[in-house]
Length: 177
Image (cartoon, rainbow, N blue to C red; front, side, top):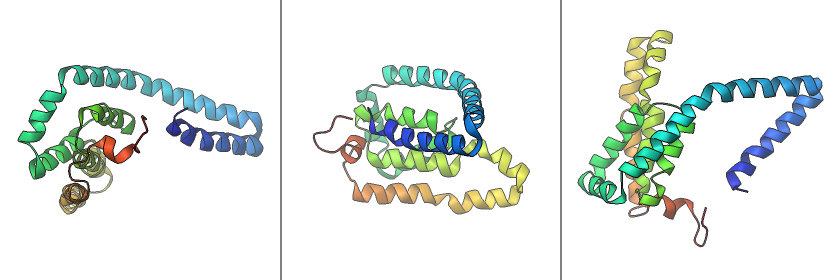
């Protein structure tokens, strides 16, 4: 079993046991009903996302990616990756597999960090909600104040992990997954 599966299984079992002791089997079944509705709503998006990821993996070869990374290395690559993350649609169950799909193509770790930070800080899909719930001026100030954060974090990451790909950072020596 993968570590990530065990990591999510343990709290799931604990919460199911808590639900059982608090409200009996009915509360556990209510939780499973909510989970199945959520899975049903998300499944179409997940399937389409994985088809998209598969097509991108076929179309974007290691050679093409290497060419882009040479052309847009350093600060240019960081800025493009951060803004691409902000424009990328969907939640973490879509963009993490997207990034993981480039893992075997040697994407630099700092580009990965720029994308993830850009997605979480710049996420363009939040703009309408922020504007409607808070205020357009506050939303604009938040975007302006947080604008340099993904870029700075990716530059710091580049400094400490120069020349390392995602595999080099996440996978221990001798480990396959």
